[in-house]
Image (tube, rainbow, N blue to C red; front, side):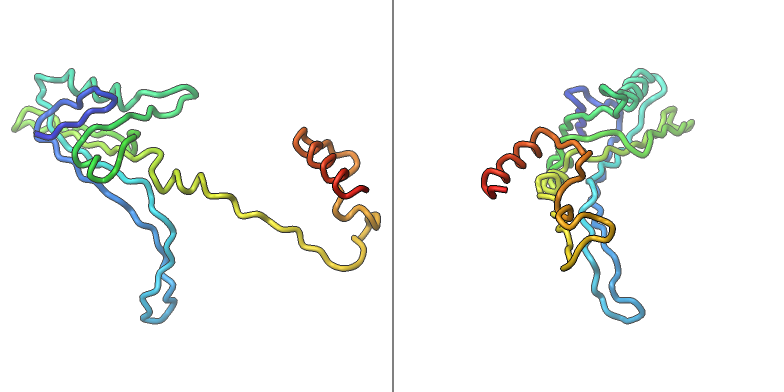
Length: 181
C-alpha cells in the first residue's frame, strides 16, 4: 500500500501509484551536423504524477483531495505542502504544490473515479543553489575622451538631481573620505 501525506493529511484512495520525474533541459548544439553536443540549461523542478481510484461510496475522499488542491496561502499563492512518501523521499522531494490540474474520470464498471494529479517540487536543491549564487556583476564600459553632451567630470558621477539611497550615501561618504575629493 502506497502512503502519501501532505502536511500530515493522508491522500486517501485505492491502487495509488506515484511516478517521479526529473526533467533535464538542454539545447542541441550540432546545427546541421551529426555532432552530439548539447548545452545544459538546468534541472527543472521534480514532479510526482499520482494516480489512484476512489470509490463512489467514498466521495468525501475526493472532496478532501479537491480542498487540498484548491488551498491557497497569503497573497493567493498555491499552498506548499510538506510531503511524506517513499518515492518522494527517494527523489529528494520535501515540499510540493499541486500543478497541472486534478482530473477525476468515472469508471462505471468498477463504480469509482480514476483520479490523476501532479505535484511539483517547491524550493528544490537546484533552485536554492541558484538563489544563493551571486548575480553576474555588470561592468561599465568607458572610452577615452569626453561624454557627448555632458560635463567633462560627470561621466562616472550620478545625476545631480538623482537621490541616493541610504546605503549609497554611506558609500559615497566613505569614498570621499578615502579618496579625499
